[in-house]
Length: 134
Image (cartoon, rainbow, N blue to C red; front, side, top):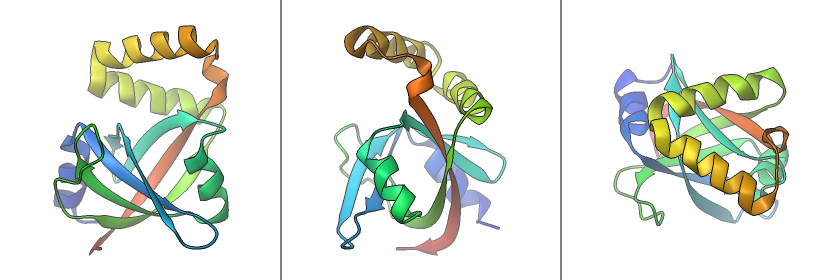
């Protein structure tokens, strides 16, 4: 079980740098919003995003608090991500709305108008964090 302080640190950040890995091992970091429920962290993203494609090949991730541009503001921790689909995405959506409130709802509306995408194009990521800094 991960250290509660690590989960609290990552969950308290507005943005977290989520690093996924290409097949050749190259790291790709993306700033994301993150929410916590019990001993897991959650991210919501587009089903066809690069990070989801990379996670299908390698579920290992690194997480570090960061700013909106992805500049890390704290130490990174390893973890393992699981892709959630179907009804589980609604649970992740609820967690995000609880943390980011109106900002999350406005972002979703803007995304749907801009890309003409429905909610069904999203997946959740459930991340189990290791207690070891990377």
